[in-house]
Length: 479
Image (cartoon, rainbow, N blue to C red; front, side, top):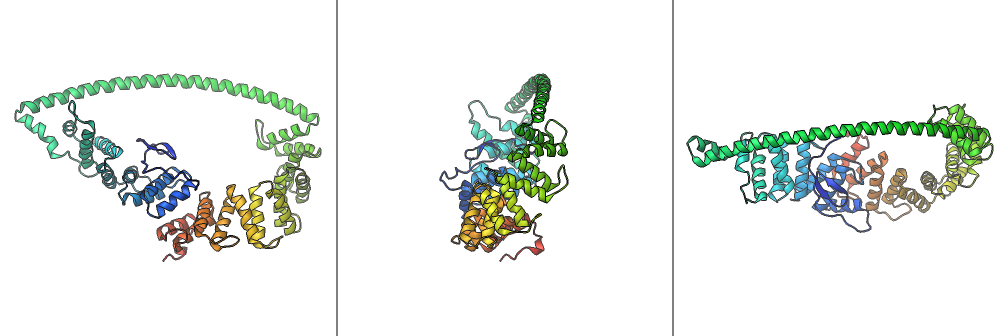
């Protein structure tokens, strides 16, 4: 994991950050990400910088440092001081771009010239690490009563020249030494002062090292004690688990359906006991025969997947239907819909598939809502109805289903079941793409290539086509 050294406040999304914020995001009811992106694509430098931050930290989007650099650069070229600092930092660390000290200094200087303190500190600190001469540092050491801020500006200027551009200290920083050789009394005093500062600094460093070593020793002792406590807790938990298992076995042996089902789950998942699918099937079967719906569903899935028993589609259908017919059997209802839609162990029956999908969809199962939307869009098992398709896609999309988000985006792009709206299409494609939906990434690339809902950008189009896994030679043309 990359360790960030510097910190700057980013009020809306982050508590501490190596990057700088240009301004606060909109506090309206609009999706902050979409509002920021829209403003960024219209050329708002503040939004461009903030969008870069979102990509840099993966806040609301998949973390992507290349995209962060893209948006930082857009804003930096417009003179946004925070973006200039952020872009310099990306070059400095090699995040999302090849590490380049010359470019880092260039952009950090731009920010420092506008008074950005973090940029000044960064230039100064990195210059110091790269060996700017003692004379140069001494020349910029603040005198009693001298303004600390102006001194930091001088240090930033001196170190900035050295770091990534000039390795020798500036000529003027050598003057005190030259004057000393000529017998200048003031310069000699200055040299003595430097030596004294070095001795003091060395003593302070030793004291700090000792304090750090003591702290480390204390932390080691604390860690040892924590490990002992953890071992004790593990032993207690193990004893508790063994006690609970014994009680569960006793209750299961006495025919309690809930306990039989729970014990079956521990064997299927290997929770506190070696995984044993055959034992799980046996316990599920006992509970299912007593009419316990969760056990009926689990048993049906074991038969369907051939897990702990031979695959048996007829038995799977039998037990899944038993579970689906009970109140709250949404998972079984969805699975039955899938079985009928695929013709798995039964004749394909789209009407039955749609009916079971509807039952699960009405209970809020997003996969069922998406699949029912698809049935309406294709006219399978129901009369084709784009408005109904869009409605069910929306229900699933708002629950975060990426397939439904992509499909809803396509409905907006095509004007099917809803008024055509390219901005909405892009918004939903982007939500799905953020969840790694390949089709949405490709569709987003098309929108950028054609300039629909977003400013036309071949760079962004190629970026999204690449994300979708499209080879360069097969990418759609971009004017």
